[in-house]
Image (tube, rainbow, N blue to C red; front, side):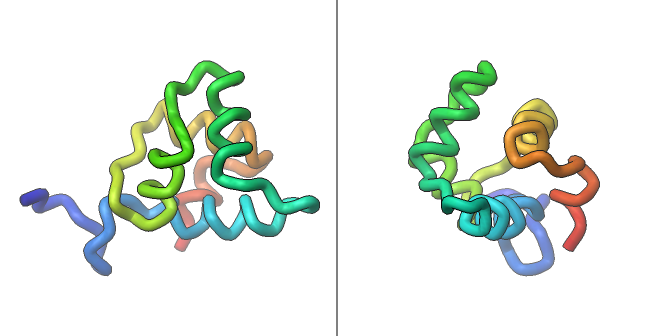
Length: 82
């Protein structure tokens, strides 16, 4: 069992923000479309990985965090801001 969990038991602090940003992009972007964008940026993430990240059931590496920030056009600090 992982001991390095967020206070709410999740494995990351950016997942909820990523989900919020993804859904509020006009037009809203699906998890699959976001995974496709990340793959074009060189990240090996699929729809299932996005779902796990957004639900807090998967860690996010610093490299992935940087890719999310670039794709979502937001700073890494803003993704980590709760």
